[in-house]
Length: 261
Image (cartoon, rainbow, N blue to C red; front, side, top):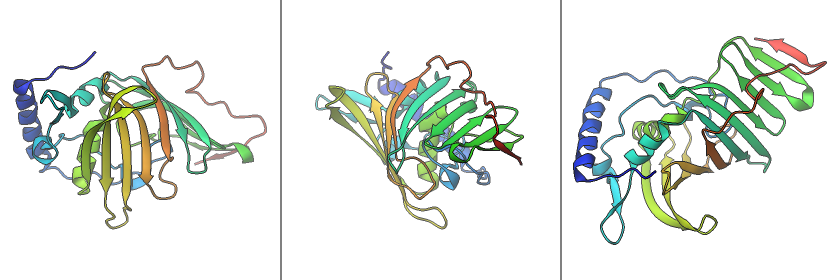
């Protein structure tokens, strides 16, 4: 279902964003936390917190217009659409061209993941509320941490809210433009985000392709990313799919070496 906008709605949204931005400026940022998910982003690069969607109208325009001057896309459309996401199923390609798959179950109220499974080549991570399991298949080695280690500091159902906050915080750039997708045979939205090198945070650049009908991201391509900071591409994403039984549980393989941390 398309989300309709009009000048009155856009003005109300912008006012709310400005008010939230003013409040957020007075708050201190949280410390960086380790990130173990290898699907989209890793490490300090993904230090994102709940925040306003910035002064989009002043920086990149809250909407871009087609030739008939009809609003074609507004970032709040994607923000609203993603707030109904409770599960994510993603297929990925790593820098060595290996293929991977991930499942994530999220909390609709907070946007944080509650369970996840990320299977990439010879490495599997399963996160549960009780423990996080790291399985190195080629070594038949299991590391267990008796706590929940987040898959990512990005809140999956709040992805664009956190993305804009991250771009602002690290003085990056965010832009949008429409593009016709030959494979899908329809126009999509290209979201381009980048952040320059600063301190121990290296240059990052990626593209998110957004479905023009559902307003949901359909793929993510990393253009610049440091070693160990994430896979190269999220090739496709499925939302609110039924999670197969057992995918979000981990059973220690027979004869595996187990290390508890």
